[in-house]
Amino acid sequence: MIHIWEPLVHTLTTGKSYCFTNLTVKNFQGSTYLSTSPNTTANLTTQTVQTLTGPDMLKSPEKEVTASEFNLVSKLNIFCSCKVCKKRLNDVESFTCTTLKCENCGTRQRSRDIKLQASAKISITESEGDNSKEMWIQAFTEQLETLLAGSTLSLKDKIDDIEVYLMSLEDICLVYNVQTTNITKILSFKRPEVHSD
Image 1 (spheres, rainbow, N blue to C red):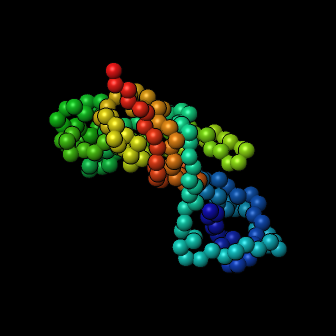
Image 2: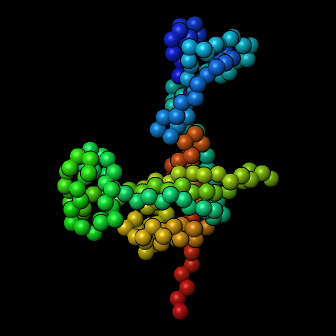
Image 3: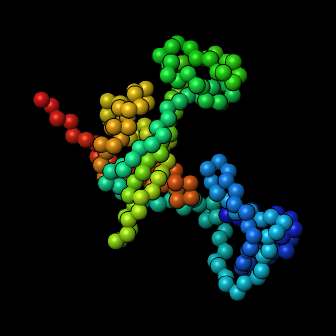
């Protein structure tokens, strides 16, 4: 996506193709965008592209991939947010307490009313034909809860135990957004077999 600002916005025509120079790169909320600057130039080209309309413009490019296993699990964070100011509560480790106080706005709230949230960076190997590449994807609360469902673990358990469990999963089929690398859906996976003595 390119954000086009004055004075270029009035010189470009819908349906025409342009070659841009001197664009700037902006990072906003985990997404990278291109933007024009006072030094940006736009020259008409002969290449044409199909014009997207309606819902096609709003689609996020998603991709389905099956990973034989998670290569690495990094930065697993379990936290809760203040119900008033939405800032992260720092004393999640004391979640066993009956109340928590937000350091930001000073609101005290019952811990039983606060839902735990989570995020993690996960490395997988993506294979396309004879090529394979290692890539990092992001998992958030909904996806992590899906992966934990059916196990004896929940987000209230120790981070080390959750990470070990995630590393034991196999044949994980998931969908992720190729622009943000956020997992959007867990389709299937195999849990480790439990051996009884």
